[in-house]
Image 1 (cartoon, rainbow, N blue to C red):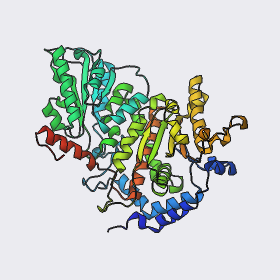
Image 2: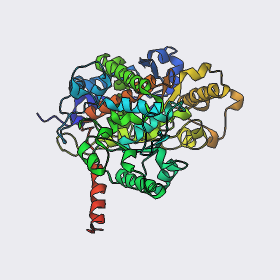
Image 3: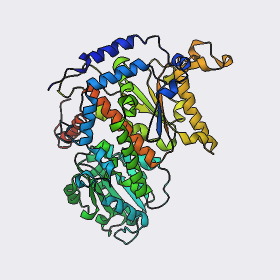
Image 4: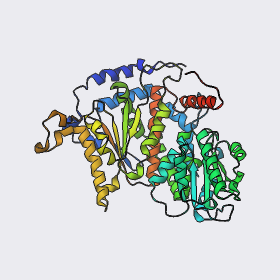
Length: 505
């Protein structure tokens, strides 16, 4: 059955009318008039808190947004996602990455990724995996790009310094500099190259793999380089043809999208760097977020509320960007991870029926780590003509840390969120600027996200929550969040050029 365009729904029109009623609304006024607003508008999932009180919205806004979500049949789509139905219609497959988070809780073997990679990771950490010369592996270089790189890189660095096992490095860019940096100081006899590619045809990844093998052969001509290769892929036959030994090829199902693959064997770098227990805690945190998304009423459902407020700005305020500012150096790769998750998933121009959309979809996601960003891009956030809703992502444990700089980092996040909401009106009168060029109007929305601590469980819950946020928006926009046909165009043109067939200029 073909559905009506979303913009023709009465619930959509009701929101448009409601938006016009909020021209005079100011976040600072709402917070001052309702001391309980912050408490009422703070939601929790798996120990993470999401303070939504600093948004250009009132209780009626949220109620109207929920009505729109129900009119778009969100709850049925959510059930279909968790049931593994073929909701990725353009590729005729499920998007069942959530099933990977049920590891050890289900007897259905097809629901899990290849579990042997965890045993392999532990063997590497213990020093029992040996190279061709009999030496233990000291350096693991992980080659991937997009979803095969961003998630594993984010979590590996977010969990902090390694305490044992081989050093893990990542390479995504085909620019030789990144591979050179990852191999600097390494010895071929003690290096393992892990090729992570769903299709095992990704040009950049395979070119980097060939370059890494050439580096080995140049420095150790007699070395059997095959014993220094491992692979993670949904196409094990291709990996074996490339020269990877069969016992070091770890697979995952085809219905796991690249940007949702950190929960699969693609997450092996995390297990190598931080151990099997950390990886299993990552899954546990994601499973807790899944349970919340599946069971919590829409009015208190964190990913639903995040998604709808984001949609509120895109479709009813004309905002085309949103910022993600992690106030923790260990979370520095979060903006890049969310850029792919949201823009590749929801950067679509036609709906599920193939009709051109008459409303916008995914905004541009951008961000930088705090407090660094306060000295670069925050000028625009506070005083620019364009405004972006901001996610401030911080760690609640910093508030009571014994490290003064961590306490200062946490207070910075709160101060910036309040400054965006209130503007300079909350400054002491003696500090309040009078010149127009120094004034900040406030009324700029943000969400304060607080992890109880930066550990594997909290990271799993955070990333799964953002996944579900993305899915909810795709449902309301009536688009397929699980394909990425636009990515293929540039790849095909490159193939033409490499084959000597020039496209039209």
